[in-house]
Length: 454
Image 1 (cartoon, helix red, strand yellow):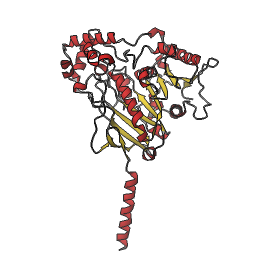
Image 2 (image 1 turned 90 degrees about the vertical axis):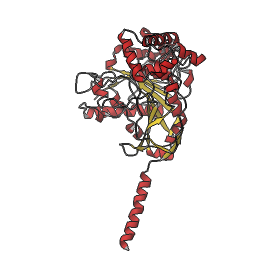
Image 3 (image 1 turned 60 degrees about the vertical axis):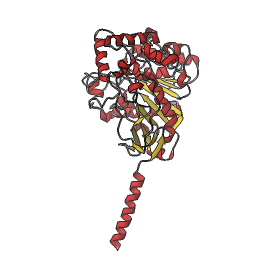
């Protein structure tokens, strides 16, 4: 009898443990979803949540459509497929650095996002700050779950991190006169990847409260092409009021040398028509019937002829109204707190352009701007503080990298994590007190924070 009693209480205890450890189920756009425990205790990760309908078939080269509802509980334990792109795993530097595990599954059905949140916030709510990461890759490659990207360290510090995929290359930025005619006055043709970004931002705005996030405290941030995306969005009337802060990493600043790099709709459409003529596509039906592999092969042959299609934001007066340089110089952008910087490998021209941007923002007054320069020459080779080298540090993922990082590198990573997450919380990398190691730019003190090991 005593043994039976012990077994009974053991079973009750086990049931309680299972119940307590079970991840919460939440309701979001599309249905119910359940995350899984992350590698860090107290953090739940939701992988591969659809934020739009699959852009396939008749939805290829169309604005992203609403999520298709699902039945039952979707267990979000697997990252979604990544956009079709060139395999870069054999690149001399970046292949070893960021594609060491090879390329994940690629698919045209790629509009998925990932959320890292403190488990307590998911269970009980909490109104936590939210950070939406836009990956780089020249608008032709990259994805939201690259090796350096992880939200554990962010969630530990009380910030919910969201990463996502968007259409790239020909599938994301092909414009065409026939596609434009299909759009009518909306002028979306050539900006599909940017409309994906807007859809992801809107999804976060509408759904993040279910994960314990504050929809009124969203920071958008990105690096390289992701930084250029952020620059576009902080000038876009379409998303005004949908985020509160921005971080621009290695995207440059006010640069009159590249004035007008944003392509006009006419340029994009004519280039797209030229590509389709080259590929032998005479109708939209033929264009949409071609496989992604065929489109990529045709585009590779097209570029081998010395031609190209503009990849990136196209001027459509909704998402993109012109160049970032013009908007910043004329105060035609959101007045929000901004962090902006570059790596030493980006070149001193980039650092100078950023200072010009900071000077312009200070001149117009309003919210503060914080400037930085990442100068840590990464150990292990002579690549230095190369473009993208700061990613390991500000995501807190040094242990995923092959490099022989030191305790000093780990200290720098902790400092950067604190600065980035403090900015998301308070609009200041120094935190709630807003004083300390990182001053905002002013005319009297054009402060630039140098990020390096001590």
